[in-house]
Image 1 (cartoon, one colour):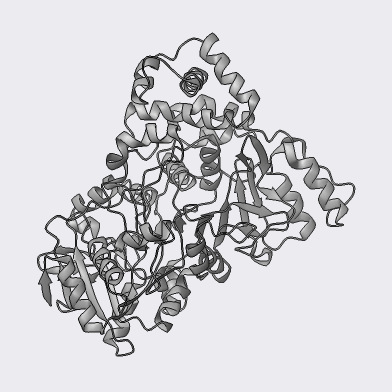
Image 2 (cartoon, one colour):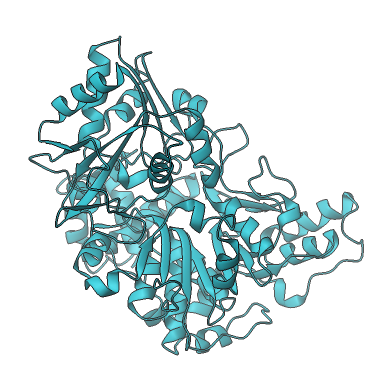
Amino acid sequence: MQRLTDAREAARQIVEKTGGEIRLALPLGLGKPVTLVNALVDLACEDPSITLSIFTALTLEPPAPSSDMEKRFLGPAMDRLFGAYPPLRYAQLLRKDALPPNISVNEFFLLAGRWIGNAPVQQAYISANYTHARDVLIARQPNVLAQLVAEEDGRFSLSSNTDISTDLFRLRREGTMDFIAVGETNPELPFLEGDSALEDADAFALMLDPPEPFELFSAVKRPVDDTSHAIGLHVSRLIEDGGTLQIGIGSIGDAVAHALRLRHRGKVAPIQSDCPFPIARPAGDAFDTGLYSVTEMLVGGLLTLFEEGVIRREVDGAAIHAGFFVESRAFYRRLREMPPGKRKKIAMAPVSFTNQLYGQEEEKRAARVKARFVNGAMQVSLLGDVMSDTVGDGQVVSGVGGQFNFVEQAFALHDARAIITLPATREKNGAVSSNIRWQLESTTVPRHMRDIVVTEYGMADLRGRSDAAVIGSLIAIADSRFQADLIETAQKAGKLPQDFTLREAACDNRPETVTRWLDPYRDHLPGFPLGTDFDEIEQTILPALSLLSREAATLHGKARLLAASLLKRPHPQEEALMARMGYGGNEDMQARALRGALRLSA
């Protein structure tokens, strides 16, 4: 293995070894060796005779503020919140529709919502289940695999991304693939064992040790609102001690993990006993045996549950098997500083292991008992179809990822369940709409694989039930502002009896009902239950910015904000908050609206 410090020289050697025709396999997310990739892209831009074909997923980018208010909030804190993560050159070119014809980029999963409307990316997107993405890649016969790695005592770890890379290295050892592997070291990347650790010192032909390693991308946690907390509390009833758990990223995943932590501490039962929505399931006791986690993504909530002893049931010496991670800098630090013996119980594995039962099926079935696979969705149809990745005009929001894989596992295992979570409504431009609809514009999981759906208003158990029963159960967890229309539509279609009536307890599904339920328990339900990189003043501003965004979408809302800025009592920290947002002296209408939002949210 040759070690270099000059990225451009490493890129030149890759061009020389491949004859200038580079079919580059890049891990998704955090595993991209940004310094090396940028050097390759720069060479290909300078020399049209070089052909560079990139296959990857989840290209990470810090958010680009879309308004002056977002710039004021995020601008001063960008590096602190997201890390000084360098931009990927190919992403910059794609943003400007300036990728030269000798460079192509195909992704099978996109950073959620970030590439809507970008024609080159939307046209080059490849729809594939996560477990099938490997086979799509293999069919392209990649001749270079490039990855960010951790190094410890002369050994290398794939760390954050065993997902597909582990299988590629295995296939190369078996003689069924032929590629050169190039790595880039990064001291912030935690060294993980399991399939992540490479015992062969010569697994890489080239290793780049940049003089100034870049900061890892930091995924900032979103606030956990009442809707997410309610969903988390409902889901926590479904998790059985001694079972298996998978949860996804985002505020609902954080809420599920926090509710399980409260349950383990004996603090969830009072909250759940006051639940105003009819749920015929017990709250659940502390975890005596503990859970085992098999997940494609190791999220902060799972790490917290592992640290607190909720996840501790071991399979082959590991309490967690995971395929990849992208999290906060605090998450990376916790992994780096964890005692080695404890860290070994987090075993990174390929998604061919985590996301499916094929291969070692007998052992997997024995391990994945009472499995609960928890994943989010954008919308669910009254017949049980799930929409999670693409909107009606074909624009890809994110991708299928592993969601279908885990739903499929839930049906293949005799005591497993697939739990789909989603808020009952969404708001856009001041208009509220239902996320439970008669029909969907696209489908990620078809209705014949319907299982459990959870909104803030409860849970609907759909598996093995008739269409009419499924429709009635989903209407019972829809927002009450839309229930009458949903009933009428289903009845007109002949799918719901004309004499159908909702139970009285399901007729008060409104946000204020959730708020009344959770208000007495605020001490146990913080906005950032798993911690945050936002400082205290930023945490105080966030609710006001959320309210400002909603209210400013309508004339009535704008008037309410301006009236509040004149008539309501000032926020206790108002001047400090306004200064943090860069306002002082003469104020325009936007500043007055922010003052109104601060006062309304106080």
